[in-house]
Image (cartoon, rainbow, N blue to C red; front, side, top):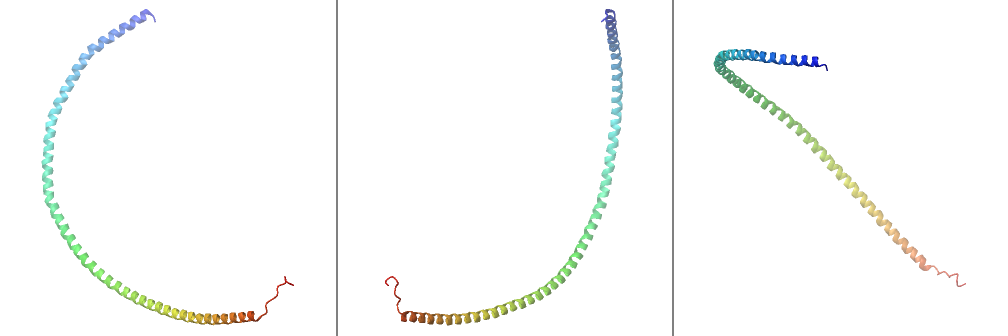
Length: 174
């Protein structure tokens, strides 16, 4: 880089630093003045704001207290009305349940009679089936006894026929 240019740049840097330092003190003084002014305004506004907020609190407390009595009165009326409606509904429901109970009882009586009839028919059917089964068992027992007698007689005949027959000669000895 050129020495003249280097020297010129160095001079510019020195000049700028000087201007910044001299402007810095003025800027600081101006900023300090703005801060002081703002603090004063905030302090005066802060007192006014506190007073306004206190007044709003007092007003709201009064409104809440006056509204509280009205609200309690309205709630008490709602409670009275609801109790009346609940008692009316309770009476209505008892009547409806009573009627439904009687109707269900009639239906169960009819179902009970039907079941008794079905059970009787089943018992009678079982008894009739049992009688038929007993007769068949008796008939089969008689047939079995008759067959056993015939088998015994046949065995006797076979035995007597075998005994009456001459013994065979063996073919070996011929």
